[in-house]
Amino acid sequence: MSFVNPRVGRSFNLLLAALLYMLYNNMLSITEAWVAQEKVGPLLGMCAVHLTMLGLTVVLFYLRLSGSPLRRLRRPRR
Image (tube, rainbow, N blue to C red; front, side, top):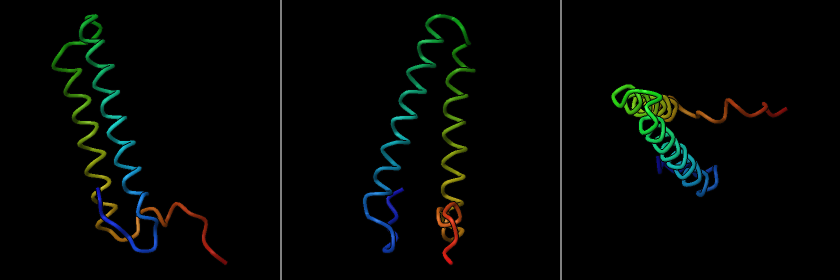
């Protein structure tokens, strides 16, 4: 996650990593509360969080290796 593109600010990847950590931590906390309240089963709850983050990680690594992932999201220059 700490790959640096010289054309993009150095803090962008650090900000993205911090946001992903906060998302993961909040998902774990919510799922832990649901398991404690017996709204979902322990196996289903924890596997869902970990598999979601694993999928997101695979997608982000694919976009990183495929070239310029975030450049496609911006409006083209004229």
